[in-house]
Length: 95
Image (cartoon, rainbow, N blue to C red; front, side):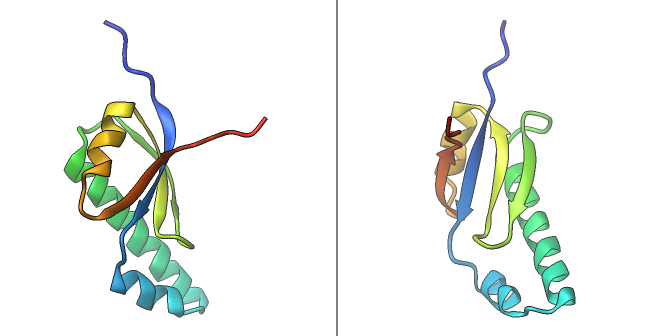
């Protein structure tokens, strides 16, 4: 049986007061703390909702509290139902 097609999706999170507080700190240390916080938060969400080794997170996006991940359409539907998630959009490459 063929493995379902994976594509890159962008996942954007709902309001998080911790993210807002950390984002306000413009220092180098503050930036590193924000990056670590978001990476852990996004990894935790994926681990909670999706089976291990069925997705690949490509990056966390600090400026918008979101991340890029390679997943199937079915996995995108699962993420859309999570209370922590605001929106899930398939990457649209421009020609």
